[in-house]
Amino acid sequence: MKIAILPGDGIGTEIVAQAVRVLGALDLRFETETALVGGAAYDAHGHPLPEATLKLAQGADAVLFGAVGDWKYDKLERALRPEQAILGLRKSLGLFANFRPAICYEQLTHASSLKPELVAGLDILIIRELTGDIYFGQPRGRRESPDGAFAGAEEAFDTMRYSRPEIERIAHVAFQAARKRNKRLTSVDKANVLETFQFWKDVVTEVHAQYPDVALDHMYVDNAAMQLVKDPKKFDVIVTGNMFGDILSDEAAMLTGSIGMLPSASLNSAGKGLYEPSHGSAPDIAGKNLANPLATILSAAMMLRFSLNQPAAADRIESAVQRVLAQGLRTADIWSAGTTKVGTIEMGDAVVAALSAATAKTTITKG
Ligand code: IPM
Ligand code: MG
Image (cartoon, rainbow, N blue to C red; front, side, top):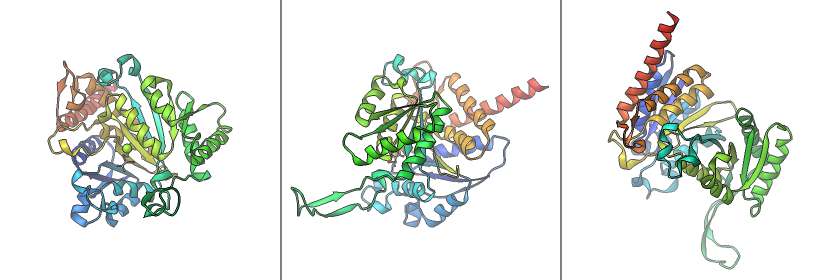
């Protein structure tokens, strides 16, 4: 099993280092190779996604990704900005299915900005289409406006588009995921205004015929944004396009109070995937041993489950994280009175220790 390790920028290097330690503490053999990506790659090689990094990612069974971005690159032309690295990886590896769970951990219920009763036990899964929509639609650019009330003025434009097979494949992924959970799927669109999303709704409805055991409903994106803060627990699985999914997944992550805890997986049709925390590169706290490594550690667990066929190892990591939370250890982002504040490295130490404690216990039981 070969894992490409792409730590990236900001807190990326610190959090990925802890996830790599946790992987190393399992009794599994991995080959890992690390490469620069994002701003770090731009600084060293003049490009956020150098050819060698892309090759490494293409040749690996899975990619463990930290985060990219820093304000200091904001002035660069778009093609050279750190964000292009993640967009380029998604596109060139065909990672069309993005899984973003939003789980409210029992011990962190009070960290949410919503009332505890609204989020206690929250467990929703957002499935975001990741390689289409207005993110990648051509044509796009700047030009002199050819028509309309502002003809002749300078303008910029992007193109929102989805093809039938693109919608069908993400719909299948979503129905299958819903089948493994509570069998409820909400498809989020803007069919009342956009042609692209009327088509989305029609195609999702057609695919539903193959999944009669899953209850499907449709919701406009503005209403979905509202329902997510009004009554988030009424959702189970949400499927939506790239743009709406970007926005709704941040909203959902934040209402769990624990964006520093949330992993994500981006998969292609071969099951190969890129795994990254749902949060960003947080350059303001980088290098200070403050970042929460748990989202990345949990992303490594998702990697073991989805791409490396090691579900037992994934379970072990997830239980170790639960145990560390139960011990009251918290990084600054999830700290509250009465718990113990620890740094990035100490949190990694604790997860590694919890892993071996679990192994020791199993051995004793067997003996
Ligand atoms: C995300 C991020 C990216 C996106 C950026 C960094 C390009 O916001 O993964 O949600 O917009 O998809
Ligand atoms: Mg985003």
